[in-house]
Image 1 (cartoon, rainbow, N blue to C red):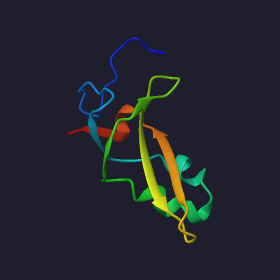
Image 2 (cartoon, rainbow, N blue to C red):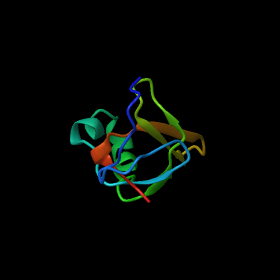
Image 3 (cartoon, helix red, strand yellow):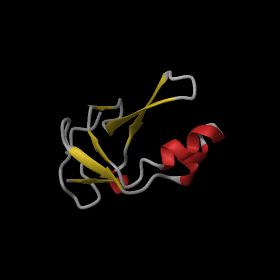
Image 4 (cartoon, rainbow, N blue to C red):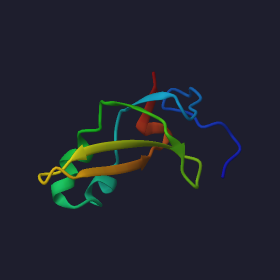
Length: 88
């Protein structure tokens, strides 16, 4: 894990508990999901999330939850690169 500060797209430090706006996600990353989940992942762009943790590489993680067609909760935890987020 890196000991240097985690920075957003505007070089602002980001820590657990901060609110970030997802400003982009890699098309390759989006395509790594099953087709029926891609729209949910893409819908994260432009939305605000609380940084809930840091992954094993030190990237800030945000969480998205929704209910599927059966009413079951679905969750995705995504680690964001600096250029993918903006601290608010």
